[in-house]
Image 1 (cartoon, helix red, strand yellow):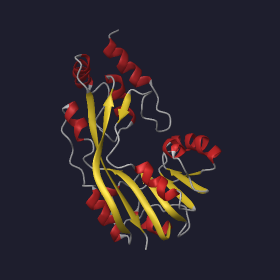
Image 2 (tube, one colour):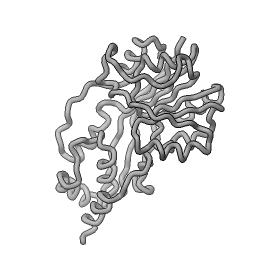
Image 3 (tube, helix red, strand yellow):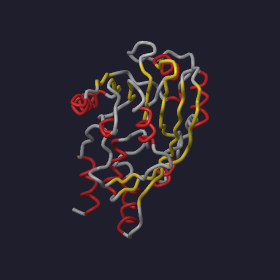
Length: 259
């Protein structure tokens, strides 16, 4: 069996547990120009409570240097809920299973969306890392003076992936810093700060690349290992010749306050 075939078979068989996407260190991620964790940590140390929206398997939240005495996490993907509870319960964090919101770029302001199962003004700090949200519901659960801190994936975040695979990129509704700002402001929040940039994902081998695209299907919904075999073999040969395999993931962040 060739090394190419071995890597693809391993990628197809390897499961994803929680939301740990390093593939045992074979996928490296560079930092953005801002430090989301530092920002959250700064506000968490001054807040009596915190909600982490879309905690995944609780990986990021468990590594946060400080968590307020009352910290709650939500997760909308059922297989992750037990993983998150196992990781976060020993840290005193409650994990609440919720119905995920529609993609922000597809939301209409007056459309019905599932409400988060929390009372009005429940939290002084709500953080959100790569999770869709309903701006009006975030406004509802924030206490007066409460802060919403989010890092979001831009609508064209996956352009490099489509280019690598030589596939036409579909046109999607725009979701960037300006559209997110407008959505939050329409809900009554005051956006105080924000920025745009990208992180770089570098893949050590073609198996890690295929595994990532298989388990993060929103990056390229059209991808399958069998259907993209020719493109994967071309990229594998490129790696064998000493070229890097990497792609940018365009992101943005912002902070908003309920006055």
